[in-house]
Length: 209
Image (cartoon, rainbow, N blue to C red; front, side, top):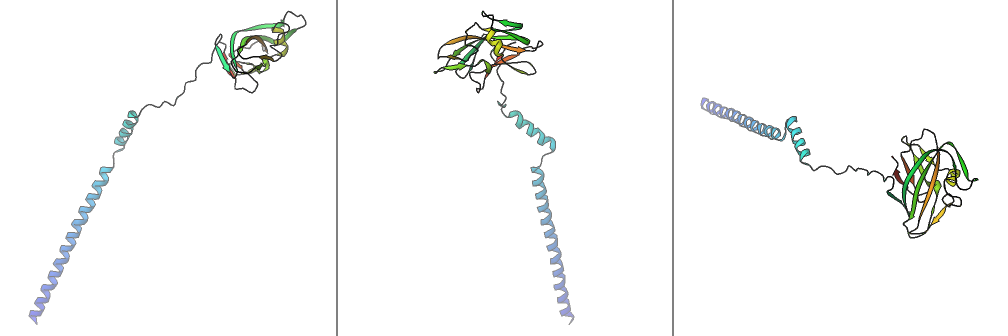
């Protein structure tokens, strides 16, 4: 009986030792796996300063953007400015006149403020006739306020019988010179003109300073 008890005790001891060994081995394996995972995570992470430096380096190495567009200055006096079928060339803007009269004493005009008279040459660069409409021409100041042309002033600013104020038809390749008058405040300071080949066209700006 004692011999059987001794054998049973030996078996129980071996089982305990086996269990302890199993636990030790599993603990070691778990530790190795945990260490490996943390090393992998730490290798994939960078300190904020390092990440920022990398981003700055990538940004500095990227080519500069060409998306900024610089708008060219508008044409000025004695420079051609095209809109539709017309090529305009403004030669002068004369302000400060209160009364206008042409060679016909009955064709005169009196300004509420002052007249500014725009002298412009109009050439038809299209392939069909086009009508010049003085009322589709405008002046503007720095605010910018926009000023329309004066019918009486434009009639008086051109020779009697001129068609500049009565919708002159200009054939292809032909030029016509006209004066367009604007009744503006006495304090008006012109910055530019907007000229149109028709009332519905985009128009072209001409600098007057």
